Image (spheres, rainbow, N blue to C red):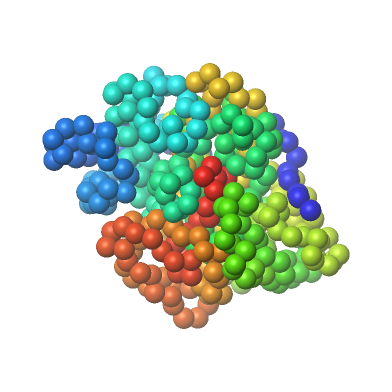
Length: 403
């Protein structure tokens, strides 16, 4: 059973919290990224952006050591969504269309910073901007198996992938989903930044906290009944791990109503046919409610969409890609919020062997929602985390990924 939202094309940005980066704050982020590039270039003998990666220890140390120089307005703008919509649009990040050259045909081409030297430098600087913004919000991380472990993912339509359930698709509706729902270390906060979107292709967002569910339905969906499986694009290997039943819903603060509901939702990879009729009915009602409360955001260049991945599911409406260098181009960063707690039971999940790249992870113990604590292993400023560590991963949907 595969369930998706209707193909919504009506835009409702007024239903999503709006914030703006003050002009000085936006300029400060861009300038700090340029300064970091200059420092790295000088230490490397020039043109460091040609050879460095976003997991370079010196670059990471610069980001971590200097993010505190940014104005407080940046941290204020990048705080988690504050309304029941579970999403926020942050506007006025300064950038121009001419900076980056044509939209590349794949994430791999985008990651290579192809084109003129000035455009390569600008693209690398923008990736640093993304990390500075994400670090202002929490702890950015990547997936070892997604876009070669890059901390900043490029989301562009790619020829041959038009009908996939991935960020490289275009002609099909990207099903609403919790990012990396199958994994216990999925992101708390998802950051999508728009470089280009001339066709106003909309991202869909639906918050579980705006749904109407009966007490009986909440009880059914809060019971671990079915697993959420990894995407087939992960390749082989995950079948060697036991599939653990997971709850679809639970209460963050145990109030018993919808005001504090959180969810893990990915119907395309949930074997709903294995459940009884009563559970399937409750799940179908949740799906219908998520459709009813769906809002859409057509991002403009310089806008960022922050999605609370514990509260809202997101997707994308279909569009026709031209592959002429003018198509939609987003950048995505997964963010962990160290102060946010998840269910203690998630620490026992295997995550199907998927691992994260977590260079900013705190060397401390992460709190759990109920009882005990799970140690978070530090990576000396960089490294990978095992699937069972509390709250440090977002799923790896293959080499292209959901968005």
